[in-house]
Image (cartoon, rainbow, N blue to C red):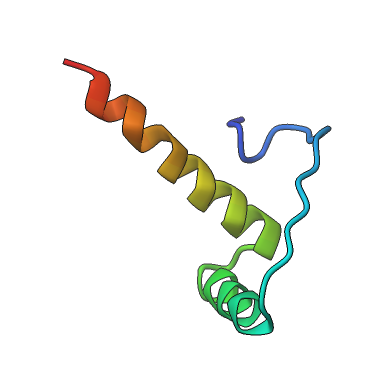
Length: 56
């Protein structure tokens, strides 16, 4: 298992424009993911980038 699929105990709420929600829903559907899983995997991939630049 990985961070995106492990048992979940925490929650993050966010407010967004309708157009942003629709874009996320379309993208998630295109990848065959739930919106929550799409947002989580995308955010985690982005969150790791600064640390990857620090490695020699």
